[in-house]
Image (tube, rainbow, N blue to C red; front, side):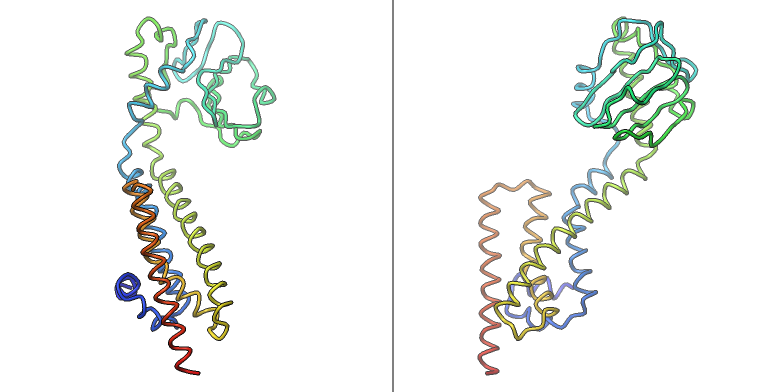
Length: 270
């Protein structure tokens, strides 16, 4: 693989000698760079150790301050009156306290995610469907006992306790959501690269009809190496647009060298 990366970057004319590579190897080459493209996400997941201070401040500022006595005590939610309280809301999800004696999902929006605390359980409500029910007793201890009256009387202790419980809960499932996040990111990278390569290979095949599509696929994949590397560094380092444009020009130049080499060899054969 090293030789293919080196030749793609330094000696683009030499890419032609790899045109008969097995398709499975070419796909592995794409997978390798899709993983590199996802490296920022992988690093973020590995380093994640809880909610950021900025996000905690956002939650603190936007969480509703309750005007009635509500508490979660010994893993049971109780309030003075029966009603549904929107505790915290973002674009894609809302956290509710449902103090009604019976839980009615018809009261909730089917256009986003809902995290519903009711009685002794937490319900994850996704686009109109209850997808998961978790007993409050299974949550971290900090989330099994929450006195919402402390939001105003002792706000620092209230939010410290809340965020400690939330962080512990998120980290306990890090292996699951972290693996899923990385897998989705890699899959998106593979599909993006494949779409680009398949289209480019089709144009190359239209231009040089005598070359089998399998070979044009391999050639296009290797000739795109500089683009793969540019996108990887762009993702990791947030490069400026000017630098990216310069690197893309270099990448297109290498493709031009490959095309001229193909034409030279075809003329030589004829």
